[in-house]
View 1: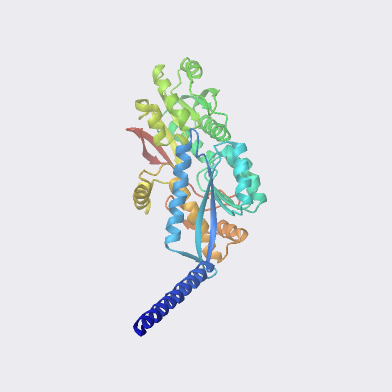
View 2 (view 1 turned 90 degrees about the vertical axis):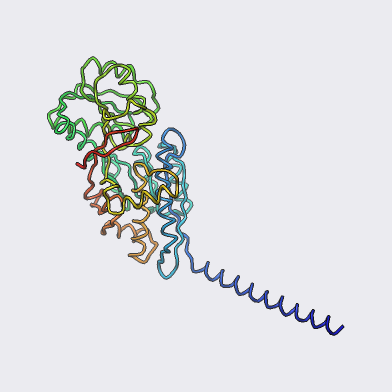
Length: 387
């Protein structure tokens, strides 16, 4: 009997001890959580529809950055920071983009990567500016940074650079004389086409036509037939890959012996998928930034991205990765999470990222953004030269 009492007493002692350990562990965990601050990084991009491939690629670039930052970890004001990605589908649509901007701002998000599309970024930027949100966008229409908003940064070349460098390459290297322009009437497409046309004329090329389509169109036969009669040597398209791929096919089907030129949005493997064997050396595009393969940390980034997402990074994955890291570096530099202080640090500082060196002028444009000219081989964009 005494033996049983002793066993019960021992069991109670063990259980009491375990309870104390559990309580201590719980207290320590609570204390650790109390020392951790969650910082939400918003992402606005087309996650559905024809441009979803770009939206997901961009989102994954940001996601990889936050996973890397959380693994370090980052400390601000003596507290460990845990970054969380809040990704929203703006459908590549201006109205949806403004609604997303309001949702992110209302949810207390103070840092946003995106929007991807100029037509979304321009109206959304008003909402972000009014809510004190720091924004890093690859949207390339010059109007974006001409609005005078603080804490708005373009982490990529503008249409002025993309369009003009493509025109210079066409005139100087391809020796083209007669060209035509098609734009999709989006803010991006119109801006890019206008810059190409202006620079093409300045470089001595004859722009014989400017036609218009939409970012939903799939049949360009009427427009292309008109251009065929003008014997153009190249057609510059201000628009996106979902239209560019079919356009390349139809150029071939109509027997038009003209190159198809464009900006960064057709510098993607999606162009090869949609255009098939009609997309090759005949298609050239300009993209902001230096070559990832030749960048110091480019190959390592590509390898980690592929391992994490089982896909090659597309046009702007590295830019979105850099944008998230740009925010984090400025937070550490200022030892603050105050977006006004962080934005001021980004404006005044320099950040060496995977895709390039980020230093901004008073408008929020990169002081220097090289442009790389690509062609296609085996359905994939292949760099020719930086210009």
